[in-house]
Amino acid sequence: MKFAENSNQAADYLRRAIPLMVKFNIPPNPLNYALWYTYVSERMPELNTVLDKTVTTYGTCPVMVSEQLFREHMIKDELESAKDIQSSLIALMNDLNDHAHETARRTCDYSEVLQDSLSALTGGKNSALPLESIINNLALNTEAISATTRAFQTRIDDAQAEIATLKAELQRTRQDARIDPLTGLFNRRVFDTELQQLISSPDGVKTTIVLLDIDFFKNFNDQYGHLMGDKVLQYVGKLLLENTSEPLLSVRFGGEEFAILLPGDTLDRGIALAENLRDKIQAIRIKLKKSGEAISSITASFGVTQYRAGETAEDFIGRADSALYRAKSQGRNQVQTAQAGTPTV
Image (spheres, rainbow, N blue to C red):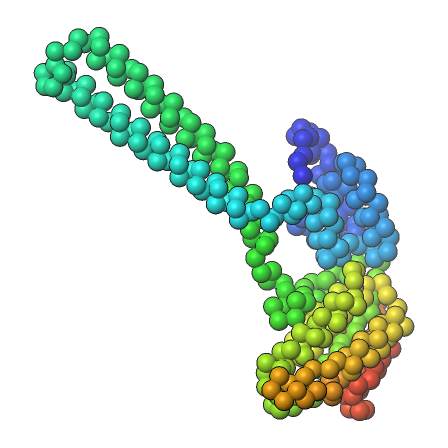
């Protein structure tokens, strides 16, 4: 997306955007500056509508929502052309290489002209040529090499902008450091960042956490091997991706433990989601490749709790973890809850 404002207008937009970001506890990073700069400029009414609804719902704009809005509204065209990035970069390099070879060839020719002219001027080869002819020949070749050099410099200048754009796009196509490579879910770092922003919201956004842990996973690994264990983790990750859409955030919390963050959602919604996932996980059937034996003992235990205003992220997660521990200790394959006032065990 291109911005065409003059410096005064741009400064005015920035002065108006920053207080809004402070008001809604928006992290001051380049992505958010671009979103809220565009918001106050009112150039994209659909973006303004979505942002207004988001801050009304959550009291802020969660990190994952901000990133999604940036992709959908700010760089949509660039992302749609991402598949051509590699070929574009190769074509650009080939083009520059061709220009470099041509410039080098002309430079070599010019060097020979200089040598011949110097020889003629000092009484060597071609010394019989009139001085005017030597000067004219030098002038013509000097203009030719100058034109070639200018053209190559222009191409380099143009390529710098292209390379910068392609580099940024290529970086986005690489494996995202926030993604767990095995399950395709976001990782714990993303969860912690998102949770901290939500509970730091001025409006004290109500949020629910669901923690789940695959039952007897260590025994499963010991019996069937880590490759089968990885397959189970992948199945569970796939279930979470299919059953949680934005603004819900599913992550691989660590090992065989997963977490789901439900911004602004009630405890009842979290319980219903947990029960739904519990049913689907216990329905997973995996066959051993060698024997054809079906593994039917995959289950998970769940702990669900809702945020209590003023508590820390650690206390919030700790209460969910206590509920999960209770589910484990009372027989597994069940959902347990911790009310807002329940102390951490």
